[in-house]
Structures are given as structure tokens and as C-alpha cells.
Length: 333
Ligand code: NAP
Image 1 (cartoon, rainbow, N blue to C red):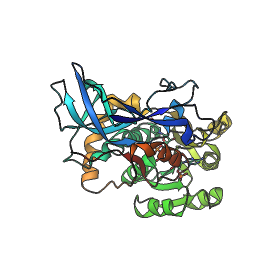
Image 2 (cartoon, helix red, strand yellow):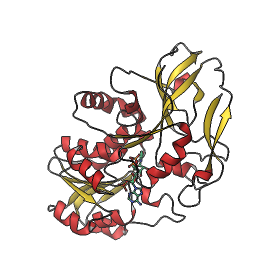
Image 3 (cartoon, protein in one colour):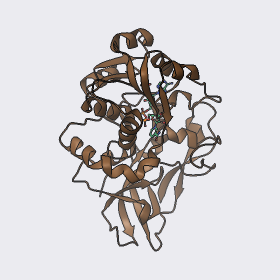
Image 4 (cartoon, protein in one colour):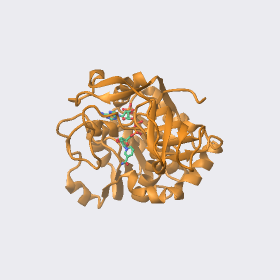
């Protein structure tokens, strides 16, 4: 048998564990061109919250009874495609379940010699690519710029700050709590850290950004973003990566007055990492090298057991994850 987590009710506001259920299912058999994968780690991400609602979005929402969508890294058990064989490690959109059958073409092989396999779910996967293209393509940082990042200690934010520092920028991270702020300074090399739960964010930004803000990598929206907008420099770029402070709200609040963009001749641009898939090879080899030589550092926050994935998800939305939120499902054989 194989266990899986499905959606039983659409969350109203913050999700509850009762919105999910753990089910038993038969282990499926792969057909021609398909692969059976046993999950080792599943990812826990803010976008999953939007998939649980019926609001219009860039991807189809979940129906009640569907397995929660997620990136998963796992081990191939059976393959009916020449590209994979049992024992291979692969990553794909397999969901919160212990086993999944997928078409081989949507799986990517992971080389366990390059880096720990979990990195395929963050720095060497979606969130690393989000950081790279959001910062370099949309934020267009120049050496000497001040780059401010919100949710800076999270999966995307921890990489954005380090890439901006490599690009010669002053980096200022905003995160919740003193432990995360210590990580910002000591682990990810941010020049300054602002604890939005305990500091006066406006005053702290004034001190941390004496030359104003050239790039604001926005992961959160809401009041934090409002405070950063008031310190923009002329020509500032604002990649809108996420708005996690609004994901549980029935009616998300607008966080910027368009007039502000005129005052600062600033550019605000939403982006989606999936639009950059064909360009991942530009970033991947450098990310691999920087992870291998220790230039890029990361922290993972691993919860044990597929049955605890809903708890990990709710915890992540509450800011309890210190690093990339993952759930360990099984050990490799
Ligand atoms: P993450 O930062 O590892 O985890 C989410 C974090 O959001 C929490 O740890 C919490 O950190 C913060 N948060 C939650 N509620 C908040 C609030 N009300 N105000 C301020 N911060 C709050 O998650 P991630 O995967 O790296 O994602 C970060 C953002 O990037 C999300 O908005 C996500 O949707 C977005 N994203 C976008 C793309 C894209 O293609 N555009 C791709 C991946 C991710 P604190 O403890 O610091 O509050």
C-alpha cells in the first residue's frame, strides 16, 4: 500500500489540518513510457495554498479529493522507459504521496554525486531558479546597488541575498524573529537584517539603506512592502516574486499606490519561474558549482513523515520554517 495526502475541504483563511486527509492507495503499475517513483522528500511551498482555492490563477486549482501537488525527489522503482532504471534518483511534480507513476518525460534525473538530493527541491531546483531569474532578469542589480529582500530567510530569499552579494550589491534582508535574522547575517552574508516582528521596520530600513533601495525583491507584499516602497531610489526595480502575507486573505490588499512608481520612475514586474524553464541551463551549472564549493549556503527545515506534511505546510505559512521546508518520506534503499 501507499499513503497519500489529499484535500478534503478548501481552506478558509489559514489552512487547518482538517482540510487534509491521509489515504491508503494501491501502489500503481507503470504503463509504457511511464516510471514508478518512490518518494524520498516532498516539498512544502507557499504556492500550494493558491492551488487549494478556486480563485483564478496561472495553474489549475486542486479539486477536492486530489493529491496535494508538490515537487518530489524520489527513487525509481520500476521503469518502462529507456531513460530511467530502478535506483535512479529523479525529481518531478509527483505530489504528497509515497508512490507515483508519471510519464518519463516530465521527470528529471538527479545526480546524487553533485550535491545532496534534497537540493533538487530548492537551491538546485525551483526556488534557486526563482531567485536567479527574479533577481538577475527582473531586478537587474548593478554593483553597488542596495538590494532588499523580504521573507529573506526562506527558500527563495536565502539564495537571492547571496546572489546579490556575489553581484557586488549591499544586501538587506527582512525576516521574522531573531534566529532567522542571525541566519541572514551569519549564514547568508546579508549586510543587514531586519526583524519585522520586533523592529520598527521603517526606522530599521532607514538605517540599513542609507543610500536608498535600488532593487526590492518582494516575496511578501502587505505592510512590509509598503515600508520598503517609501525608500526606493529613482529607477528602482521591484521583482514581484510572491505575496505570501496575502495568501490566506479573502481579498488581498493592494500594497502600492501607482503614483509611487511615477515619483520613483520605478518598475514593478511580476514573474513566474516556470516561464524561464528553457533558460535554466544558464543558471544551473553556476548554482551547482557554488553549492559544491560552499559559496552558496542553505538551510533546510525537514519534517519527518508524509502524514505530517499538512502540519509542515501550516507551520511554513506561519513562518515556523527556518530554511527550505521539506518533508522526509523515506530513506533511499
Ligand atoms: P519560504 O520563504 O521558505 O516560506 C514562507 C515564509 O513566508 C515564512 O517562513 C515566513 O517567513 C514568510 N511569511 C509568512 N507569512 C508572512 C507575513 N504575513 N508577512 C511576512 N512574511 C510572511 O517560502 P519560499 O518558497 O521561499 O517562497 C517565498 C515567496 O516566493 C512566496 O511568496 C512564494 O509564493 C514565492 N515564489 C514565487 C515563485 C515565482 O515563480 N514567482 C516561485 C517560488 C516561490 P518569516 O518568518 O520571515 O515571516
